[in-house]
Image 1 (cartoon, helix red, strand yellow):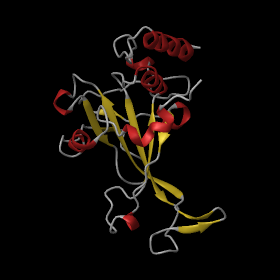
Image 2 (cartoon, rainbow, N blue to C red):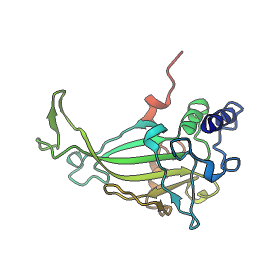
Image 3 (cartoon, rainbow, N blue to C red):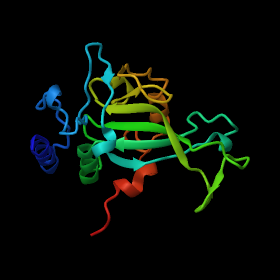
Length: 207
């Protein structure tokens, strides 16, 4: 019931054009739904981002770009599936306005291929045919939109909770601008997000 009221309030903000995830009207200790899922960014006393929890329960899965080692000279920067999730309120705000609201969290969980491929390019065979198939998860990164906190990196901060199997770190400091933000500044489609990779999900179906 509590989360339903919070979700209704968030949607009212979107409808009236506010399109923001308010961190002022929602207390941090209440910023979770009934499943304990994080819905706004939470920070510890050091200013580190507390790892979002429960994202697989209710966050929206928007895409899974894939850059395997076998197709990148054996040395891909991220040789896993990039499973990307975003909070439902931010997702609906983007669909309604074409803008990511303040407080948006985009979470990327890395996922390895199932096991070494049978072919030189790392692919293998399943009943559906030859291809790449997801296996164990292997890391987590989170991007947060906060234009005041991250004014020097185009309004987004980037956080690495570990590029390895779980458990991931409980909190993480913002990565240096040159480590993550600069790549998005130089290459992202809009507002520091590679939106073109997720267009089918972010674009509403015609009526």
